[in-house]
Image (cartoon, rainbow, N blue to C red; front, side, top):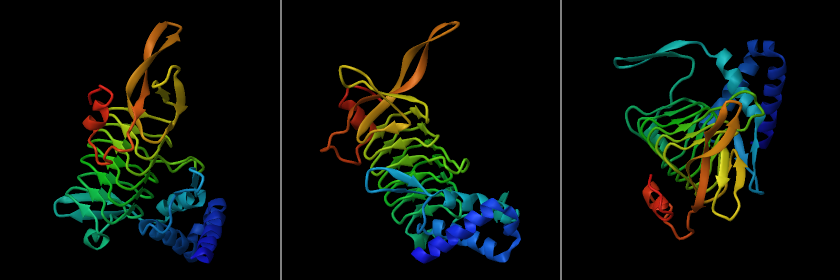
Length: 276
């Protein structure tokens, strides 16, 4: 497999620099092979390393981008429903061991692990959704987003996608996280393991994420530490026209080690005297 990966990578890098190579059958088959491996979970756009960091496989993102121009638009029908697109939908959920509730939709090239549950929701190409995770009603998982094991993406959660620039990190939500209803996580933000994100919290790559549990605030950008419990907040900022409150995210405590990882949002926030 390692030798195949190196060969695939070499072809993709050449095609990225010289797009005319996409006219060749070998290059097209290589691009399709990479997307097939993504669909099966044998390749990932981003992977965790042993030092609590993540590395982005830029060449895999390049393959996803190159996949679009070699695919033809076609009509896709399901009874009275109709779409016109270049990318197939995933099929055979029974064989994959995935529960998919109507009208759940996942594009081919997204990996959905056995034991995952898709309520009426959407998962885009290049995304990775690990085992035991629930993508709840009207939640969306954008292209190349990485969702860990036993994560709950509550109703209406928006997980942003990213394809370009290819060096940009995707959104990463690690194992056992709970993301509250209507929360938005975009721009390559990383939510570390067992974190609890409250309803309507917005986390971007530039959001001020302020830990207010100590005597002095500690600020993060685009990163929520492990087991953090996070709610929406504001901070004062002076503009030429005056001083105004600007949205931020507040870390108000840590999820207890003893807390059941399947705890509800209300349970997690109750420890800190905050309601959802």
